[in-house]
Length: 178
Image (cartoon, rainbow, N blue to C red; front, side, top):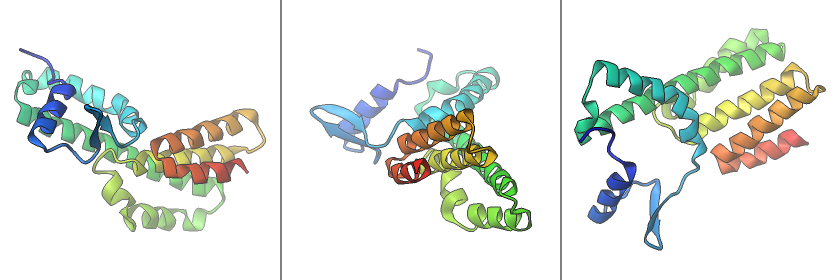
């Protein structure tokens, strides 16, 4: 039979074998996610084209579970690396908008290469990658013009989404609202 192996069957098999992934738990006979869904949803537009290309250039890739796991892991890693690199570019642009031209490049390099942000966020769809992207986006909206309704709405939406991606970002979102 063709098609991607349903996640439900993979999760049920994992539960039966006692090897449920760290991001899931069992409550009342149901498998529940422990992490917010937004980081995965942000990756959909980046992963979907990769799957279309896989179908085109490697037909039948989805028939072997080991290959499915490997390919899905790689597509998620590609999307995570892209989002983290985009965050770095937006952060650099933010510093330029704040008229910090002299330190913009070293600060961007230190933030993304000198911390665990690139190391971790670019490898997998964890919460902090999309949360950082959305926080930088919120700050960019405010740096453009904090007096216009559309920039305030954009900043508010980005901050709210950052909190949806990683609940601890609610503190940063609240601070931006002050």
